[in-house]
Structures are given as structure tokens and as C-alpha cells.
Image (cartoon, rainbow, N blue to C red; front, side, top):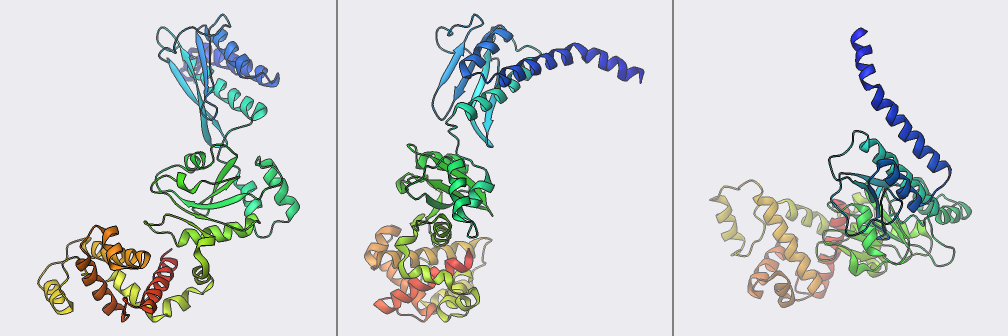
Amino acid sequence: MEALAVRLSGLDPYVDGALRIVAFYDTLMRRRVDLPALARASAGLAECVAGVGLRGTGRTIRLGPDGREAPGPAGPASGTAPVVLDEEEIGTVWLERAGPAGPLDEVLLDRLALAVAGAVERYGPARTTMADPALVELVIGAGTDEAARARALRLLGFAAGPPVLVAAVRSPRLPLDQVGGVLCPGGPVKAARMGGVGVLLASAVDRTRFPAGVRAGLGAADRPDLAWREARTALRLTTAREPVLAHAELGALALLAEVPREVLRGNPDVAALVRLAGAPGGPGEDARGDRDSRAARDTQTTRPGQATREARETLDTLEAYCAAGSLRRAADALHLHHSSVARRIDLIGRALSVDLTTPTGLTRARMALAAWRLLGD
């Protein structure tokens, strides 16, 4: 107990100062001061330049301890803290001391960041992308009544009138708020995650602005709940060549999403494609026919990952051919000689028992590929 008492007595000056800083910012927040007032009070308290920067608006405030705008460019920050609102980092606060950071600077910056977030939310508009998932779920939920849906849209910042566009997004590398931020820079956009899939609600979506590596399905219905269902279907049918699909572009292919999975799996064309996609030694650029390819596989050891690579080559060739509709255009897309693509397509057609050079065979292959994507989702 004596050791603990000594330790606490040593912390007293720090704790007392921290509590005073907390009380200082609590008073500022109760008085609902704006951003310049927060920066001015912080600079006076810290006795150095204090800065506030917001990403969405590009606004930067730098004030000195005398309450005036700090002259010249910003100096090196002696301490920084992120400003977070709705789980999204919307800006930064900092201090510019001539020397090292003070012992209470971390507490000061933490409270300043909280106060700035509150001021942005109060005086807004709060230019954030991530939204409360509960509100987004009310908007896209099938069981939501229209009054509750309209209220949720108002709380999310969408005005009554034009229908809200809905997108279903998978972004393995880029954060969802960054994806939403580039899609609709001139209008409101809100995002949330639902069951591992990102939801974007926007007043408008420029599909050409989706970043590389992002896949998205776009709903077409006026009602957000129906548009969400359409967007998920379109997302499931995206490919590396078509990473962004609108439900309106799917046509009759969208009907496949309504077919039970066991029915899709039992179709002979789909079953053959599933076997082909998972079989080692799929058709490659130097395929020489069934007998030669089989002999070559029998005399070689399959390396780890080889089956996956060859299956990917096979599906890539079939997808390029189905999308292009001709051997030469598929060869251009794959950067291969058309004779190599012709050999691959012949081998794939034999494996599927489908003549891929006929219109009927091409249609069957397209349908089988779409069903295979739905099964693998």
C-alpha cells in the first residue's frame, strides 16, 4: 500500500493537469463553440500554434497563442491526433511546438479531436461516408415500412425526391469509405457493411470511378430494398473483366439467381464446368489434344498451385471467348495467337460436350458460366 501511495502521489501533478484539460474542453463543448474558437482556445492553452484540418472540405485552421492566424506555412507538428466521426477518420488536429511535446499534449490533442468531431457533426454538414448500419438496414430492409424508410434516409442526409441509388461492393484492399468518397464527390454518399458485403447509398454513381480491384453490383429499382436485392445479384455475377455490373444489364441472366442452388448444381453443363474448373491439367496454351495432354500429365509431377493456375487459365479462356463472341477477339483480349485460343476452346468444348463454335453452344457456355459464378459466390 505504501508503494502504491508513493506511486499515486507521483502521478498527482499529471492527473490534476489532465482533469483540468478535460474540464476545459467539456466547457467549450457545452458552449457549442465552432472550429476557429476551438483552435484559438487550444493554442492559448498550449501556448503554441494549434491546427485543425478536415479532409472532406479541405479546410485548414492554424492559430497562434495570440489568437491570430499563424503566419507562413505549417511547421513540423510536435504532436497529432486523428479526428474520428462515425468510425471514419475525417481530419487531424496538431500542435506546433518549437521544442519537444509537453507531458500533457497527448491529453490536450485527444480532447481537441473529440471536440472537433462534435463541432463538425453539429455545424456540418458532416462530410463522412460511413453511416450507422442500423439506419442503412432500415433503408434497404425488405420489411421496413415506407415512413420509417423515409425517416432513415433523411437522417442519413438524403433529401426527399429522386430515388437513392444502391450498390453492393466487395473491396478487399481499399476501405469502404474511400470507395464511396470517389464515387459521388458532388453529392451525399453513405456506406455500411452488411454480412461481409459493403452497401453504398448515393444520389448518383459514376461507374467509371470505381477503383481497380473493387467489384460492385448496381441496383436499378426505385425502392431501395428491391435495388439492394438487385445489386447483390449483379455483384455475384461480376468477373475480373466486368468488375462493375448493373442489374439492368443482366437481362434474363438475372433469373438464374432465383433458381435453387441444387437445381443449378444438377444441370449437366454446370456440373461439367465445375469438374473442369477443379480438375488438374486443364487446357493450356500448348495443349495438343486429349491424348497428348493426358500423356504429358502422366509423366509430370503436379506442382503445388499448378491445378489452380491451369483451372484459372481454362476459365479465363472460356470467359474471354464468351464475352467476345469470336476466337480472334478473344485472342486479342488474352494477348494470345488465335490458333492457341482455338485449340483451348476445342478442348474445353470436348470437356463440356458442347460445340462452342455454334450460337447454341456459346449460349449454353454463357449460361453455365453465370450459374457457376452463382454457385461459387
